[in-house]
Length: 171
Image (spheres, rainbow, N blue to C red):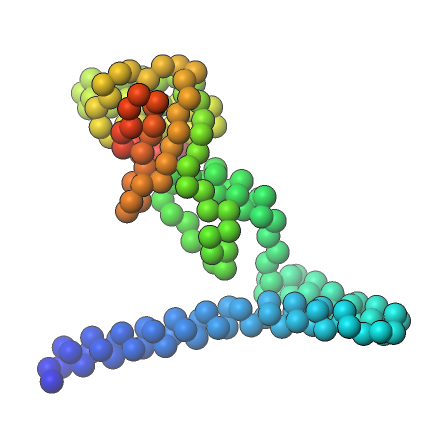
């Protein structure tokens, strides 16, 4: 067995063990805090149940202040992801696919053509700026609808109604 195979195998095993450890430790504080709140529900005595909830909420508040627990509003997550649509991917730890944006419908406010590059620059109603990466058969019209879709491998497509071309966000 060559040294190269041993090193590659060892790195792969180490990476898998490390990543497994990271995911498990990321979920532990949240699970523990939520479990503490859920454990209060079946308590029959009202005063004891309220005391249990107070203790659990105090622990959750302390974890939030320390930064061990982050509470997110789904609407805010979706709003943020819509604003970042088309920009290089940002990793939102622990969010998974919550609020994942696959397409965005907007309107072209104005456009300009660059003869040197044969590309259109598009200023959109959501205050973003995009450029075409392919030739357009028909020039984009101001105030026309535009649907931006996620493509494969980080690419984006702009659907102008009569034609679909690859686009890239500039700002």
